[in-house]
Length: 308
Ligand code: ADP
Image (cartoon, rainbow, N blue to C red):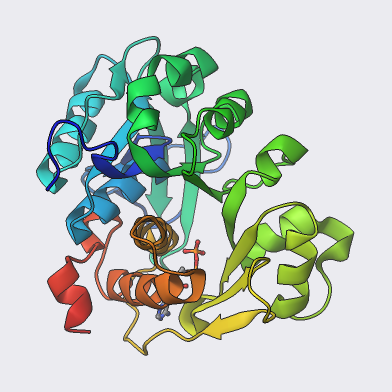
C-alpha cells in the first residue's frame, strides 16, 4: 500500500530538539561556591522533538525526525533511542556543537532543578529545514516546538507541503510571529503556556482562554488540562470549545506526558480524524504515559493504550 510513489510515506514529521537528560539525586542543592555529593548519574534520551518522535513511532506512526545533535556519545544515544522506537533518523543532522543536555538535580521531595544547554539544537537552522524538503514533501503532519531557534520554526511553517498541517506546542513559551500563529492547526498548549501566550488576556475559564487563543490566528487550539484531560476548539466547526476527559489513572510521573499527548494527536489528525476524536485518543496516550516513570521509557504502544 505504501510503495515508492506513495506521496506521503510519513504520517508525521517532527522538527525539534534532542537532548540528553543527565540526572543526579541530591539530599539538597549546593549553594553558591558549595559542592555536594549526589547519586550515580542516570542518562536518558529527551528533548521535546525526540520525545514526540519516539511517542508517535511507538504507537505505530510512520515517523521522521528533523533535529541536530553533536558528534558525541550523547548524539549516538539519541539516535539509538529513535531507531529502537522505529523513527526514521535520516533527518537527524550531526555536528556544529555538542548535543544539547539538560542537567537535572532531583531532591528527596522530587523537585527538579534544571539547567539546559541547547548545544546543537540552537544550530538547527532555516537552511537545515530547506535542505530537508524531501521530508516535508512526504509528511501529512509536521509537529514543532520551541526548543529550536524561532527562525527555524518559522521556516518550518513555510515548508509545509500543500494540504499538510502544522501542530505547534510553544514550549518553552515565547512570543510568536503572526505568520507562525496563523499556520497552527492546532496550537497545543498546557495551562501554563496558554497563560504565557495570553498575558493580560488570560483571565476566566479554559474555554475563555481557548477562544482568546484562536483570536490570535490559529485554525484550532488544544489546551491540555492534566488529569482533567483536554479542551479543543476548531474554528471550522460550528460548536464552541469541547471538553475531552482523561481516563482516571494512578499518576506516577508526568514527565513527557504533554509530548506523548501532542505526538498522538498529530498522528491521528494526519489519519483524517477530527480534532475532538484525535484528542480523545491523545488523552489516553497521555494518561498511559503518566503511569510509568521517565519520559520516553513511559510512552505506550497502541496495545497498551487500547488496554487502558
Ligand atoms: P504538560 O505535561 O505539558 O504539562 P499536561 O499536564 O496538561 O501537560 O498533560 C498532558 C496530558 O497528559 C493531559 O492532557 C492528559 O491526557 C495526560 N495527563 C497528565 N497528567 C495526568 C493525570 N494525572 N492523569 C491522567 N492523565 C494525565
